Length: 466
Image (cartoon, rainbow, N blue to C red; front, side, top):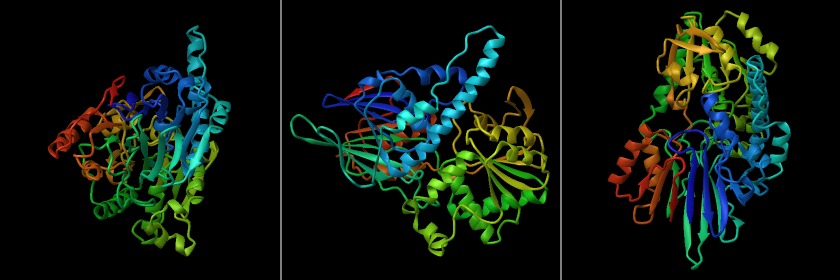
């Protein structure tokens, strides 16, 4: 068995890991690298392997940093099956189309600048037609149902509790001697008792584990304390007649925030002000959430579903679909909450809301998730006094706050608790991916103290033979 670490190695974007098993090539994830445009276009366009040689692909969940380059994979020759949960397939139907649309718009902007310089135009990474071709290869599977994906390799998808449909993937691999090796790929691991979706179903008794490490050196805040702090923060901004601007991923984070606001509104803990979700993708994704109540946790069922109430819709909430509706928010000066994609503020309608509100000290930008290096969100979180939006410089005069509670990623303690389900005498290789170095190093040290051996954070391009 050989593992090639291609993307998502010592970084949190572009997840891609290639397994060589029994003469077959199995690709785990095919995500987009995200960050500086100048760095990412060539990385995403050119694969480190020949897509036509990949036999099968496994996808843990629909987030674009895990799924976003699949249309390009198919465009370049991949013809195998792509296995993912049914909810993930439904989300990819809308997310990959949205991604193609954004690529087309982005390249249109780039080509205008290239034309002025007398340079040749470039093509988008992929188009809508490429997405349609890619979706033909998807096969939806159910949680906890073992399937054979190639000779001698059986896969089981377990609920990862990260977003709707997310999964940790267990492979039971029979080698040439008849021995069975239990391999685990965690995908992105959610948090126990987080809102809306179920807690993670932990992969256990593994021989090999490839595991995310996004928050390997951080502990999240206590849930009950954060809920009240979230409510009080909103009340403070409203009292000073300001707006709350929330950059949030359209899939997962937006639904969690809407759920929490619905709960606080019903409990009279926040005033009756307009709440806008300004993201067509979030609107479509929320409909997918509504179509999969089997993925919801007990609290969501108890508070909303058993009464026939929609967790993601209430009287003060409006989903905006058109550009015209979005633009109208710019002229409204009353207190409101605007939730808009993307979470890392690297594209989408959130950029317009930041541009229009970032210089007003009455307003608050509220971050509710992880922001990768070099992204606009990270720059604002890190306290930069001026930022560039659409080629213009803006002073960061508004308040800025981060709530890690809403993160869909497990923290250090939760990651270690996950690992403990595979004891040191059984787990022979522990490989950390999807994390930056400052998060991985402390986690590795703690895990080694617990007696685990062969604990690594492979770099991009590294190959491990087992």
